[in-house]
Image (tube, rainbow, N blue to C red; front, top):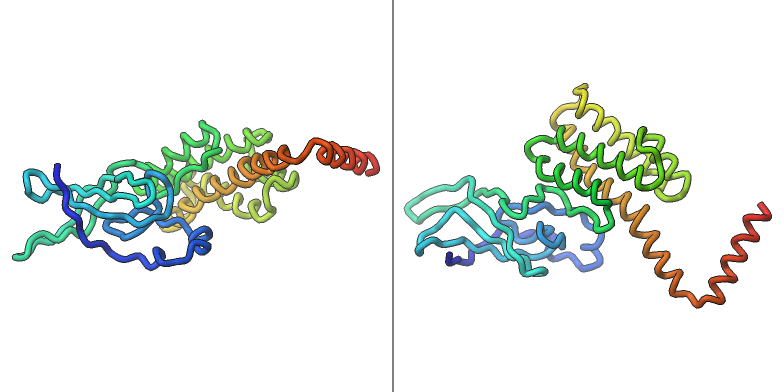
Length: 246
């Protein structure tokens, strides 16, 4: 199937400096947008859009090729306008990969947690309540991986903060997750708009906890192991002595 390059809508975020890109929020894939976080590699990058042609006729399918990983995502036109000048495609949905509108799961996320995360991402646009319930379940599993019992998210997160595995502010965020997850299973006073907003932030919360409690300690441990053995042993002895004095 042939393809033809098409014009795209500019994204002002594309022109931010690299240090600004590191801290900017997740930009979900959107039809004909010039740049967003690639659903294949997870990098914020420029996209080259191509209309796929079938026997030299316009099809309803597009490819968006990532400038970073060079791999395409596949899109299908859902809305268009017709005129004497031809067809103008105004909206489309992402067909492949089916990651939904969430950022990719962190590399160090445990497999069983990642499974819930990815399933929640796939259904989020159709059922924010269902996604919230899955993410709450994933958070419970993640707490168990971090040494807690996984029965009460609120107390588990507080314990992890007390152990300095997580910043104290995460406790407040987790309260929101707990309330949202409970209302997802037992509908209460939260509106659909509440779920659309809050449930989307739960993806970020799980990734944040994985970074802070799993990835960063691993990275620090690797750095520590690069330290020469002599100074490392001296540091460990000082730590033991300090603990004994307490």
